[in-house]
Image (cartoon, rainbow, N blue to C red; front, side):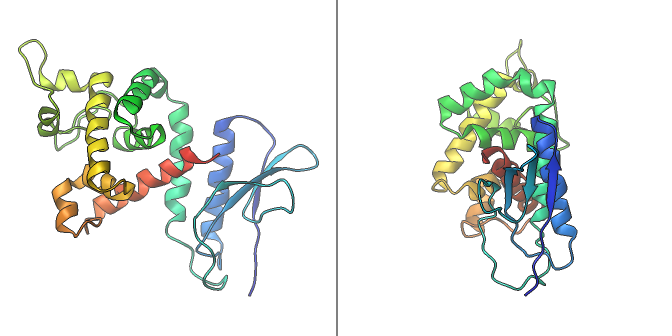
Length: 241
């Protein structure tokens, strides 16, 4: 069985630089002929004081920063995993998110929504950045509104009602209202599906009825399957040490 190793040096500090380095490593892994379908990434500081990212753990002092949750079951000639691309994209997404003024502007509302509804803060951020890229006034072609892209019917279900002075859209572009409503919905979906995050995300995208009809599995909708993969990839990056 052949083996391979890739590493990326990071001679500078800063979250965005590190995330870009990780992204470069994962993209390189996905491009290597014969790369295994599992891809853990370790971080360590070499003798020169330079931070290194690698797919091969050094003997001492390495920190696992991306855990694929898998172990090799095939030879190194196996085809590259299709999951590497979402992880690389997620690293870039997180770097862009942390550089976004819109993201920093809603930190208070994000934290409040997470705490009040018991939704993991990292998961909530992963949903928001996937849904709207933290654009509070985003409106989809289907009529979903705001940070968490809430449909009007869902908003009404959670007590957001239009008034003469405050139409529904005007309320849902308010980050506090939007995050409070969306996080309540997501919390209910997590409870409904026994804290199975991927099923809750599938339901958030396609509706709980679609997940139920699929036998409590992710429906066979390309959009929903890609959505779940994207959110989970960002979530894993945000949860990494």
